[in-house]
Amino acid sequence: MLLFRSEEHVERWSRRWKQPRGATLTLEQGWALAREWYHDRLSPEWKPKTTDEAIATFSRLGLRGEFWQFE
Image (cartoon, rainbow, N blue to C red; front, side):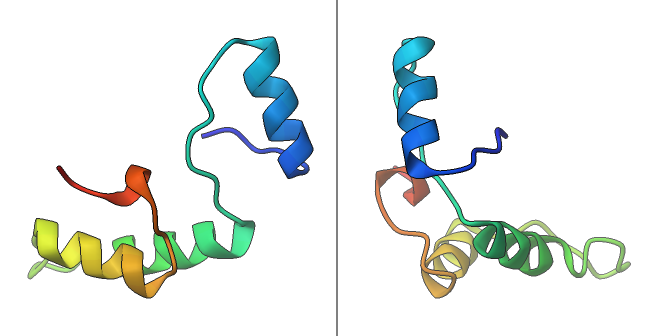
């Protein structure tokens, strides 16, 4: 994970290091994803999310696009 100040910063970094641009999240989206994904991780009843559960989580949090798809 890399943190950037702005969309322009992401673009500059991608060009400088000749890396394709990946998905970006706001800090709020990242925090919401972490809470949703790990809130029950220490529970004895914890089980990994299914593909459908993961896709539903991403969708609920507004994370859309090719990066967030399972294919």
